[in-house]
Length: 121
Image (cartoon, rainbow, N blue to C red; front, side, top):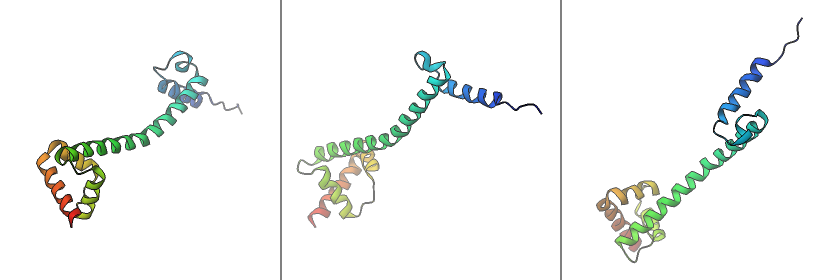
């Protein structure tokens, strides 16, 4: 019986890696060994980046909320506002509150007044 060789699957694997390395600089785009390590590293960066993106967006929402709160009320800070929102029982996350502050200033002002009332009580 003839020996079974791994030509077709190996070629497909190499092709897949080289396609993923398209656009890379130098040998990383056309030599399998260097392209394979570059694609592996790129995958690691992409995995970490997906986690970092969540942190960056949350930070952005917090900055927007802080700016909006201070613009409407000089004495109120972000942390006191969030405390008031929780005490008032308003169940909105920072993303929604930030969107509200940008697109619906009147509604955000109403939320701010409720938070202030909850803090005073």
